[in-house]
Image (tube, rainbow, N blue to C red; front, side):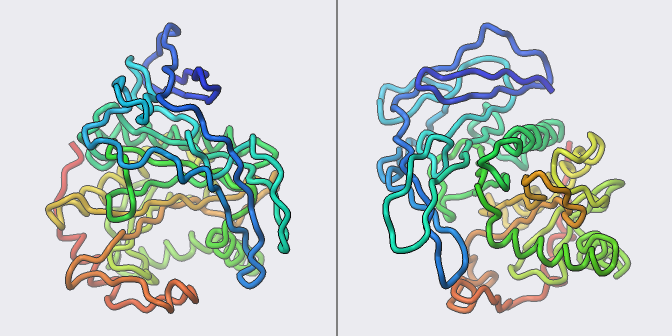
Length: 362
């Protein structure tokens, strides 16, 4: 993989990626807007025991750009940023114009609760130059490149002193609030370990200390030994399945069979098999519904606090983004307020539906 790091005229970083060498003559274009002043800060929530981010400058961010907007093409509307140059790159990453977290965040305002600066990073990951496709419809080698890009950014961001956890994710569909239709995801680099990941890691650490092996690795082995009833993809190095404990209908986990802590720890062969599993699942989603399936895709992995995390097992979790009539459910008070999910369907039923969908990765 080849990478070219450029600095935009407004001071933000831009990284271009390709399987082939990139010409050094490429330059980063100026955006149509100046970067917002990163005045974000964090406040401690005493009852939930977690940090809440506040970034009021995001109220002024570009909202609902034209559907035909291509971030490569210059726009006459100065409110719509031009972020990427023309050239032979295949994937790109740039610092968010309106970040929730930033290395330049100033001191927090006075408050009756504990506060801290909104340090960290927020980056946009553009999967392709083609605005009409999606992550699942990219060629397999391009999906693998996206995983390589995620790993590269995780490794670099994880070395920062103000970052404790790197979180790649993709929101797909207007149903989950996506305003830019060009295939893209984001990376948030938090100065703390977010609550859901922290809870998973707590359970993994307790199991590892008790059993001397990984919790997710143990669960994957039991899933495979259970007749593969919920397995969507099984490869040499990776597996995709509807977990036995799924909280959402059509929830899928994708994981390497080896208990690697984070994306940068995966071998090239493992990353390629994870890409094959991911492409299979995303194609099945769209084919099952005969329409673009809205989802939230997240990567859970080890923190970047400088300590070893043998308990961590990197994996992707994908959740449906909204209710389809008769099939999915809205989140209610128990789920949102208490974090206790009441599932209306069985994982085995949803796995059978996805298993029955034939797809081709060619």
